[in-house]
View (cartoon, rainbow, N blue to C red):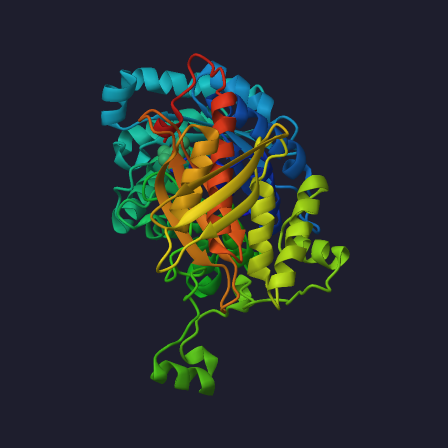
Length: 533
Ligand code: KIV
Ligand code: ZN
């Protein structure tokens, strides 16, 4: 990493982002996102926290292998980072996970604020300094590229921050990250902290200074940009701003600020902005986490001009009310239209253009579903294809429960009833139930078959595209009835909303079964995932 006028984009969607409730992804989904992040042109992909579970280790390793060796155009593959606490076991595990990447990085961290050192770590500042030096050296014995983060950096005393940064750089860290872990900082104050760092710590100029801001007070992007103005040259962020609590700084907002206001920042950022919208849409489809419609850059209304006076201005000259174009962020309206005559080749090509590389069984399932949908709908739009690809991806070939038949009745003078057929390990089961409505009846019939009713925490039904014949997409969050159960998400799409609901319910059921079966033997000192920073 070199150039002083370049801002490196460090994406942590697959690590900090994945930690947010309801955003957990399967290995295949993470790989799909990882490939898209490479196409987007991010500099670093933080792929996970390898010590936290076997699943995390395996996905970091797979991303290191596949995405960490993927060249897009003339660009080198992205750096693949694995997170590790400043502990020997964590660092060794991270080193092993990122090894297959062409450009591996170990990202190690230790808290440096008075409250975290005293209350959480029970360590003195001197002990923290010693651990930083030892663990960064250990990480450097495995890889050239080591990043050190001062957890809760935003609440760390500035003179101590200087001592820690000096120790980490002297021990061999090439990137130093100052996170605002709890989203407490204010832009002016954070800028001052950066200035202090550069003025008081000669080592700061020998490393890339990074920032990692959380959005608890809605200032993650503003704080990151304030730091960039003072010399920070790496920003850590996530697609759609997903992440712990209120989330992380949003990648698309950071990138479009740096690009649209290049006159102000005067800095270079190599992200391909026209991949922003497709990446946002893919993540939202895969996680089932919707993007608020007024979200900057990628929200559905980001480029909609409703007011007459605005529309008038736009017609006369777009730049009256438009500071960036929808095309520059990859927004193409409904995109290319496909229909029932579109063949396998056209379908595969379009899916690739939309960022989905489905193979084998997953491709076949998506293609069969596409044909079913094209039979019912006149035109199949990009958003429909993304929904179908997301559905195919979320299906695990080892899935046990399969919905094979559904019939539901409802109306003003009938009791809502559903009959469901499902297979489980090649055995067919059938049952029927009544409910408050056809969706409830279908869920109850499924519960009768499995004998283990689920608790529904969230149910969202939305139209994938405009129009009366639009497909409905259902995202559902469920758990078992007991309070210790995992909470998982399921998704289903169909032109029939009751069927989409039943599919979402079954996909959540399978996800729950999978988690319960694979309940990994976590390493003894593995961190509790929900309590990682
Ligand atoms: O928020 C935080 O402090 C983190 C660090 C591990 C970088 O996520
Ligand atoms: Zn964080």
